[in-house]
Length: 137
Image (cartoon, rainbow, N blue to C red; front, side, top):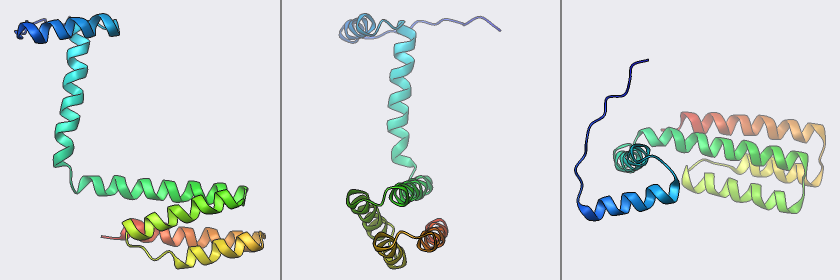
């Protein structure tokens, strides 16, 4: 491993005082504090240019949220879990413009009659919706 090559950075007195205050508060070496600050700024700055790349992340988030909500509801079909799942379905319907009526119907059937057959219908419907989310432009 090669040694670190050190350089000096000139900053105004006020900035230096603030950095020293943060260094004492965080007990972090100054170079790590500067690197953390730069990384945070760069992430925030670059997030303005991501646009299309962020769509996949959004889709994956809603797929995860839907799968988690459906799993919890199937395991514990309580009124509270039903409401949470319906809220997730509403969000996907309105934010991603996906038709969620078949899943609503399957979940309502499972709520009234929690059988293995109704559970399989939920699984198949959820799988179809996930495929639709992934392929939607």
